Every structure is written in structure tokens, then in C-alpha cells.
Length: 416
Ligand SMILES: [Zn+2]
Ligand SMILES: [Zn+2]
Image (tube, rainbow, N blue to C red; front, side, top):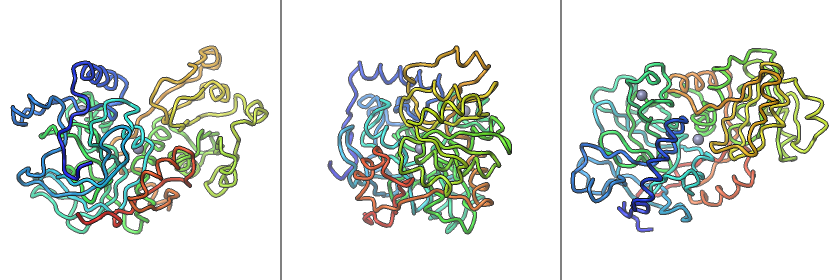
């Protein structure tokens, strides 16, 4: 890939645009706005560019007032991530610029880079578990000053006006929240670039305060994996003493076990990886079950108040639904695609069970999980990597070969 921002539009023919429009409609209706490709053409973008490029891409390196940046981008769905030079927007009055220190590696990054959810704009810089040091602030910023530590999770903007936004549920913004990457940036229409980079510019209200004393590299994953699992535990009011199962012990699952335990639940972890059973006690699980242990599934039938499934692709939920008590709840936060072979409603209706889904969390709740983790001295288990190992890390993550979250040390990035 060339090392400058390009306007190579990989999907500008009419049929793919229709697909993307359908995708946006579908994602808005299902709350999957994060996966939506860039479709909105900003009114402020030059007419000519809007006409030539119906899908807004990277800003040119010559953008006036822009901030020179370097990161790792993929040029297409089968391309590796490589060093890429680009610009961030210049600081607006309410903006905070972070020098990125660490960025966690989420399964969503792989899904997006490889266009597995469709609608990816290239070049694509993923990363939405960002911790950094404030480098500059706009004139109206009051909550941050230069040198402070801040975090950025999955969202960098939303409409601020709709019922969801007013309820602090920016992730369910009825006009489509702006994802930290692969979303149209408000005001420019350019596709947002994520945290696999040296710096990021974000509206103050979307920057999370990181309390002093937290291990920054192990805090980064809390900004997606943490909030994604914390939000459903809070929303469905998991209480001390309840039996909670966490299905899938990866980046999300291992944090979910710690969060549920810290909230006083009796936690059972379910894994398909025998080697992970040995980590159960250290993670805080009271019991651990291997996916192939059918006797355990029979023994545990109708025994759980709450199940959180974190498997990042389609899987059969029915063996888990059968584990729920009367009125028990299963919340899927992993897969964002149709679950095969479907849900057996005899099992759901037969015990008045609930099968639900949940997507990340709002900004206030993201602050809440960070503060909760600071108070409980809770953090992710991380393997820190230099950024040039990111492509190998993707392969290892897909094969469950990480304990439990890769985090990129952004010091390893060239200084541009
Ligand atoms: Zn994520
Ligand atoms: Zn909104």
C-alpha cells in the first residue's frame, strides 16, 4: 500500500452502494450501527469531492489545520495491516487530542478489517480500546488538560438529541452513533480512523477519565471488552449470589468473569479450550465447564439466573438456553450475525426464559465500568505486542492463542 492517504474507492459501484444502504438500514434497526459503512455525505464536504466519491474516505494529507498522524491500515479485505500516514482533523473547540499509549485488539477489528460484517471503507485503521495522554485541548474543553490520561472506547460521537442519546445510551443513537473507526465523521464525512495509530482527536464528552494508579495497558481492553460485558450485567441487574454463566473465555469472556465475580455472583465459565480450564480460579470463576462435557450440561440444566455468551461468531445457543432457570436470561454480546441453527422457542417459552442481545455501552456507563474496575483493582489479562506483530496477532487471536487480550504498545510505531 502507498504510504499516503488514498481515494481508492473499493466499493463505489451502484450495487455495492445499495448493499451498504441496506446494511445501514439493517444495522440501525438492530442497533449495529458500529458496523455500518460510511454512507453519509457531509454537507460541509466540497461538492466536487462528494460527487466523485459518494462514500467519504480518508482526508488528504494537505487538509488545512489537520494533524499529521501515522498508524497501521489495511488497504482491502485480504490485505495485511501496514504503516500508513494520514491526517486527523484539526482541533475543534470541544476536542481533545490524545497521544495514544496503548490500544487493545478486539475481535471487531478483525471482522471489520476483513469486511466480514460488510460495509468496510478502505483504507481501514481499526482499534477502539484506546488509552492515551492528552497532548492538546480545544478552547472550550474543561474536563481535560495537557498531560492527563484519557480513554476512548467504541464511540467518538452521536447526535446528542435523540431519546437514546438523552438517556445516556449513545450506542443506540437513533441517528447512528459514530464508531471510533469505519464510521462517517461528523462535520467532515471522512471515515473515522481508530486507535492503531499515534494520535486521535475526539470530542471531549466522548473521552473517558482514567483514574490515577491504573495499569494503562491492562485498562485499555476495558473500554470495549469491559463495557460490553458490564452493561448487560447492570441492565439486567445481576445481584450477589446469583448463578451467572460466561460462555466463551476470550477478550470479552475473561473480563466478564472478573466483573460478575466482583459483583458477587457465583460464576461458571464455559470454554471450548481445555487449556483455559486451569485459569478458572485465577480469573475468579467458581466452576469451569468444557464445551464437550455433556454430563455437566445435564447436571446444570435449569440452574442459571443469567448467561452471558461472548463467542464472536454464530453458534448454537440452545444447549445454553436449557441451562436457564425459570425467568432466566441469556444475553449474547459476541456474535453479531444470525445464530445457527436458530432458537428453539419450546425451550424459551417452556420456562419463560429471555434471549437478548446487548451492544457495548453508553459513555456514562463506560466511565462507570472504568471507575468500578479502579475501585476493585480489576483489569484485563494482556499480552503486549509491538505494532508490527499485529497481523500475526490476528491469526493467534482467531485460534484462541492469547491470554486474554492483545494490546499494542504504541511506542513501537515509527514516529512518522
Ligand atoms: Zn471491540
Ligand atoms: Zn442520538
